[in-house]
Amino acid sequence: MSKHTAPTMIGVALLGLLANTGIAAAQSPLKIGFVSTFSGPQGVLGEEIHNGFDVALAQLGGKLGGAPVDVIIGDDQVKPDVARAVVDKMIDQDKVDVLTGMLNSAVLLAMAQPAFKADKIVISTIAAPSNLAGKQCDAHFFVASPQNDGSSEAMGQYLQAKGVKRVFLISSNYPAGRDKMAGFKRYFKGDIVGEIYPAFTQMDYAAEIAQARAANAEAVYEFLPGGVGINFIKQFNSSGLGKTVKLYTDFGGIDETMIAAVGDDALGMSTASFWTAGMKTPLNQKFVAGYIEKFKRSPSFYAAAGYDTALLMDAAIKSLGGKTGDKAALRKALASARFEAVRGQFRFGPNQIPLSDFYLTTVTMGADGKLGLALGDKIMSDHQDVYAPDCKYDVN
Image (cartoon, rainbow, N blue to C red; front, side, top):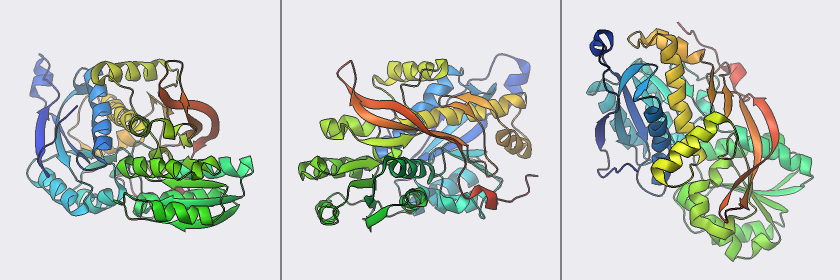
């Protein structure tokens, strides 16, 4: 696993070696600024994204679309001001061509407009805020994952169809959390008996759990990713509320990194996700096997998104014959990219955010005695976010 020791460290790693041909040797590497969270309670998630990208790059021979690349890594610390400083340096001093790796929506929103103004391509790996999906979309902006609302819309539809009547909502108070709860309410038509947004860094949820108990909810739907979510799930079960109230979450609220930390308290939790390690496609099996070989554990959807981000860039650059000098051509190639991803066939909607399938996934005990997310029924197919029709821009 990569180590990131300085708060705003930008480490340069040459991940592509020039081929021994005259054409390749003369080609300048594509400079990629990889900005994600590598410290604090969310640090493991940024590591997962980078790990998945790294596995893909290794399997592609250290190049993307046949082009050599330099990857410059920056830690945003989940702080918008830090992210802005990291990105400014990448643009002004490192002269990056593409920015990618983004995990947190608030961080992304802080760095997006300066990047767009500098004519830089931004390929967010996870963060897909509603702000950039509709009227404020930009031809420079792409996302490798579903728009923030998507998986919560799927869970809202699932609980509606299941006949659940009373749901209590809890989410970290930041743009992605607000988006996800809005998505859930868009599809769930029962009663929302409570809705609270604790601080993004909050670790003690005794008061919130007491409110959910008092609301007499049938179910709690939460989005508390990473370390804060681990604490919440443990406290929810230790309170005894889990014996009478079913806990559901957005896919960011339970993943393989969290299951390992939560243990049996995660058993039975359900979410909606665009991917699981159990998908039986040859490409996904290649990814999972490569990840386990390198990191000695199963990947999460964060790693899968990092892997698909690299495949997206590979497909676009390959369509250009490995030439990356014309950034307008690269933007168009990214927008029209069609390729097999670990989640299945990948294609963008009109706002350059992918159309997504969502499946019910549930934490279960596998035959190997290990907890994992088991793939269930498909809830939605080729789902497009509600903001896409408002996205209008000139692609030239």
